Structure formats: structure tokens, C-alpha cells
Length: 192
Image (cartoon, rainbow, N blue to C red):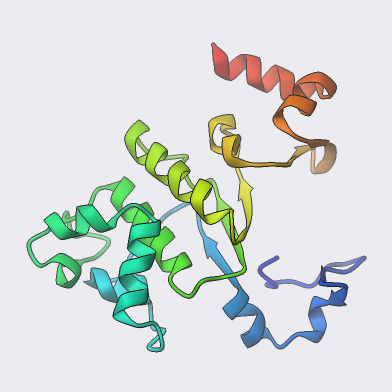
């Protein structure tokens, strides 16, 4: 989906067209990625959300922060959007850093959003805020979540269960509870 590699077989189709026929720069403007480990750069909060994309306006930065449920936190910081943060700066918590990275991904209004374990290292409140963001974003953006925690998948309309590197089942949470022994077992474990 990120087009870091081309498929060994088959094709990734975008509206019926092979994605390899799209320019990478065009694709990169359509797709955003939030990695499992949130990374911020040494710079202002605004710089971190804009992330070397000078065409993104301050209004877009603020709108993305609102979508990522980090705007209100930013307003409480000493310099607001001009507060300097970085990997070693203690200005932001892990949950805030993850939501800044989510805002970064949303700032250019992608058509596809890919998130790798977006809530795996978050406290309950931060996870709830990320879930609210994803619930809102999925209305206008194709959202692909990679997750082991079933609570993260609560926003998903369709879930693909992978077992030993292969697709084991596809369906809604309700469908999978009925049809997938693996999914049901994982659900029961997480309920304990």
C-alpha cells in the first residue's frame, strides 16, 4: 500500500488501474502512514505536523491537530504550536507524540491512511482519543489498521485475520466471532 515494494505476484489496483502506472510522487500525496513507533523531529509542533511539506498551510496544520485530538493539548503548551519538541525533549508524552504523528499524516488530507499498531503503547485516554480520530477520519479516508489489540480494530468495518502469514478470514467483528476460531480465541483472551 505504501509502494515501498512492488508485489511479487498480482497487482495493487487503484480504481481499476495498476498502481505501478502512477507516479510515486502522486501516490505519496494520496497515501499517509503512521508507524508503530512515533517519531518527532527537533523543531516546533507546527514543523512536526507540516514535516517538510511547505505547501501545508498553518490552517491545515491546526485542522489536522483538531482531527487528531491534539489541538487542545497544544494550546496549553508554553508556546502553543511554536513549542519546540524532539525525541529527547520532555515537552510531550508518548500519547501526545502519537497524536502529533497522526496529525502529520492527516495534514495533507490523504485518500488512504495506513496505521501500524497506532495504539499499542498508549494509555487508555490516549487510545480513546486516537479511536475518536479514526472514527471521524474513516468517513472520508480509506483507513487501513494493522493491529493485534482487538480494541484498536473497533473502528473497522471489515477485518482481515492473518494466521501464519496467510489470510484466514475476512468480515465484520460479528461475522468473525461466528466464523473464525482464531479471532474468537483472541477475543476471549483479551476479555480476560
